Length: 276
Ligand SMILES: [Zn+2]
Image 1 (cartoon, protein in one colour):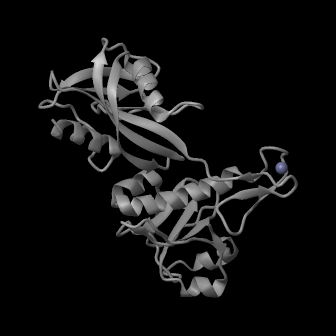
Image 2 (tube, protein in one colour):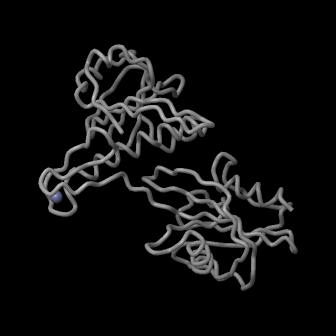
């Protein structure tokens, strides 16, 4: 759900702002923090008062997500002394996972609005629905919601050999980095079926005892990483060269460079090593 806000509400607002231009987010050049209201050093914001939205706070029980003001200035470029525009991936490095999840939520909202301005059914302009996060066609009333694309990510272990299977994907920028396997869930598949299919397609082996581990929203641009741990069941490694550069079995005690522990891939690897 989101609401439009008035200029006077903006001036009183004390929380954080997510200001987006193209594919960058505005942060303090000194601290990397998001702007916090009201108008802190950012008078240009008031020119966009009509376009600011508030994402309300959410209570998930264990962790409350704070409300955020969100503004997308599109392709405009504004230089502000003491502030800089950084990519979402850069923001991931600057902030703790909890904060990052909040920015990611705002980012996905912006992405949704940008890509749903017209109806997919009849092509007429769409408008925002005031009381929920949705866009609705002005003509045929077709309604769309932010897309979430589930993607499985799986760590494969062989406890008899004390080894795990890790791979270097073609899209990994770091040539030393090995990680768990991942792939999008296809229409009509269960998450577990996606695990079996992806593993067989990417590295040619079969797995069993597929167990859910945890999940992580991944806003590039709207994935939900669903983590699994799976036991090796047979087959020799045979990589799909369109997706994988190299895949190997690694001893638990001699792993290559792997993703940071803040990522779900890093946590999956940790979980495999430490759970006998
Ligand atoms: Zn329509």
